[in-house]
Structures are given as C-alpha cells and as structure tokens.
Length: 560
Image (cartoon, helix red, strand yellow):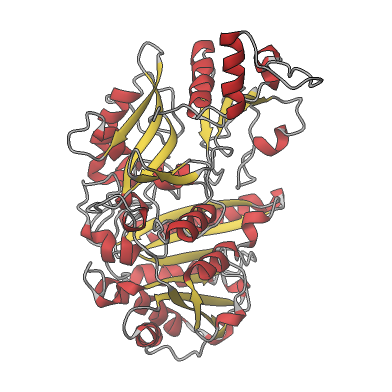
C-alpha cells in the first residue's frame, strides 16, 4: 500500500503500456484515444480541481454552515487524493499564500473564512469509507459526512464509530476535536477508537510531506496521532485519512475491530410548556437533570445505556424539551428509560406532553411523545436529519459551551431562568442544550488523548440563529450577557475547577480569547485543553514549525 497514492485504473495501465511499448493494438476502425498526458492540465482526470472567483461554483465554496462568515479567497482547491492535497499545500507555501482547510464546513467560528485567507483546501470530495487490510483498520476520509460513515460501516460490517448526531458534519474536524455522540456513555468518544491518522505537514524549510501516525507505542510519530484525539482542526497539517480500530481488538475480521451499535434503541421526546413552568418547577427540572448525571457518571454505572438532550429554550419558543435515547438491547431498557424520566421530573409540578416546537437545532418531534423502539440506523438517521438549520441557506448563528463536573449552584440556576425568560429578546431559537457525558468517556485518563474533559458529567451548548442582519447585535448581546452572568464567579467563563470544566473545542468560541469577555485570567487554551496544551505545542513545533496552519484559536508555537 502506498500512502497518499491511488490504485492505477485499467485505463491507466493501458496508457502506461502505450507509452512504454509504443502503442496498444486496437480493433480495425476504432479511433485512437487522445493520451491523457496530452490533455490540458485542468482537464486531466488526475488534476487538482481549483475554483476561482470567476467560476459559478465559487459562491458555494466560500461559505460553511454558519452563513455569518463568507470568505473571499483567491482560490479554493478541491482535492480528491492525498497527493493532490500535498500539491495544493505546496503551491500555497511556495507562493506565500495564507491557507486554511475545510472538511465538512461546520465550523461555528470564522476559522476558515476570514478576510486574510487567500487559499482554502476543501476536502469535501474526499469521502471514502472502507476497510484497509494493510492497516487492519477502517479508513475514513475527512470529507465523509457522519451519516454516510454510519451507513457504510453498519450496512457492510455491522460496526460503527461513536461519533456525533448531525448528519452533515464532516469527519475531518469532528474527529480531530474529540467527537461527542449519543453513544458516548456506552462506547466513549470517537477518538477512543482512533488507530491512525494521515497528515500532510510542512517542515521548517517549506518541504511538504505526508506522515502516517499511529497509536502504537513504538511509533516515532505517535504524538501526532495523540494531537488529533482532541487537539482540534487546523492546527498541525491537513488530515487526509483516519483509521479506526478499537484498543484491544484482535484478529483480522473487520466485524470484530470496532463496536457494534445497539440493534434497537428506545427514543422519546417530551416537552413542558413555558406557560406551565414557574421558576420553582424550572429550577427543579434543571437541577434534577444535572444531578442525575453527576450520580451516574462512573464508567461501570448500569445507566450508561441512557443518553439525553435537555433543550432549555427561550420563553418565546413556548416550551423546553427532553430527548432520551436508550440502548433497547440491555436488560430492563424500558425501566431505565422510565426511571430516568421519573428522576428528571421528580418534584416538577408542570406536566409534560409532546414536542411541538423546535428544540435548539432540532425540529418538533411530536411522534416521539411515547417511547418508540427503532432499529439503531433508522433512529440515527431520524435524529440526525431532524435539523432544519442544517439545510437553511440563510441562517447565521452564534454559540458557546461549557463542561460541568457538578450540579448547578443556585446562582447559576437563577441565571438560567433569568435569561431564558427575558422579554427584550423574542427569538425562539435561543437556547441552552444540556447533553449527557461521562460513563465510558471517563474511563480514559485525561492525558491519554488530547480530549481532557474526562471528569465532566454533562455539557452545555448555548445557541441562537437569525437571518435578518439587523437582528445580529441583539442576538449576540443576549448570548454574551447570558454566558457572562452564568459564570460571573469565575470571570465570565467556565474555568476548570470543582464545578465547571472548561469548554468544548468543537464548539469554538472566539470570545474566549478576548479580555473583555474572558476576565478570568485563564487563557482560552486552558479552557479547551487544560493540562494537555503544552504537549500540543510541542507537536506544533515538531510538525508545523512555520505556523502554516493557523486561525484565531489555533495551537500556538512554544513561546508565542
């Protein structure tokens, strides 16, 4: 196997034979095909696709999922092979062009499309998902979208990687940032199953090379593998392939090298109308949810089959909602579901009903008011595509995040209620999404991967969308004031400590690096990486000493 190369096609073999032997014998009357080498460079099948501002495709390739950020690069390269990625990087380095990388396009900040970016390497055409016998592992290219990854792995081999919900997220950025998903409490994070990574890097003298790094203890590039287990995207080079094989997996049968998902899951969605929720009931609901996760955080807890999302929507939405996802194959699955729901609703006087309004990113789910038993892949597709914002080409948005180790202090519970019931905002998309964590996630030491938040019990994501530019200032102000009030005791951000545990790098927030919003004295990188940052800097020095791959919150070189 040649890393970064392509298998030669039959057509390529014939062309090579003609070049060596003087020609290929063809049937009488058949025209001789024009040799591929005689085609104009841009028309050759193996040529690197480059889109410039005069191309009709350009407007689609200079924006990601968040329409708040639209770029103006001189060129967007769309490679299909590792060799083409290396070519694109080499051209940018040789000409001194500012370069960024896009895989799925779901970066929440402007890390790809900023005014100074001159060249974008768009990996969306690199979407292969297959089994690689030479590595005895499953290979996933960075442009593969998560639902495609699930369908290919599960339909063909009956296995999966425990990655995220949203179907359009690309593997490239999702995996490198650690990768949360609905099966995390049972199976850990997606990076807990990462065996190797292929990365195009740039040496100090500008030499572009391709490195394959594995988790093997004797691999001289093992630190580069480690950096991609939560070190974030756009930091060290261009990821062109991931290989997955679970630690401890043996043999060569692909069906035994990654975990199988539950054959069926129980899924439910219920909501509480804001008109029925007073502050006491709201506070009890949120406290119950948080405390349940703290009590059941251990890796061997019998409730690891349960994962959930609690969407605390702004009062203008009309309701708050809870989505519950349970492995239906474990003994007593229905009982686990019912006991979880009973624990969350204990002491809440308001009754719940179906979800009839949008819940954060998710659409209304009224048909799940009664728990439904669904085949796992059907449930993954259903929840993953029940997301109207993913396909809305007008939506602009802003986000923030936090990990929590303990239940909410009373002051934070009061802040949640206060800002979600503010009447100066009428945007029903404003919300805070609480999601399950811990379980098998916490079975891995904090320094074993770059994903350091192994002690967190649950996490939070603030979100809001708008399409009218006139609404942006109010939406951003609400989000910033909410977050600052929530963590006022620690300088406006969730500093790692006994209660809070920093932020999720896959939910990037540029405000964390600005002193007017982060008054804690704790730098943004300590919120994302905690004690792992110094090691990430050493990897940066070793594989990107010229800081070719950078953005507003990229890993800095030592001393920078």
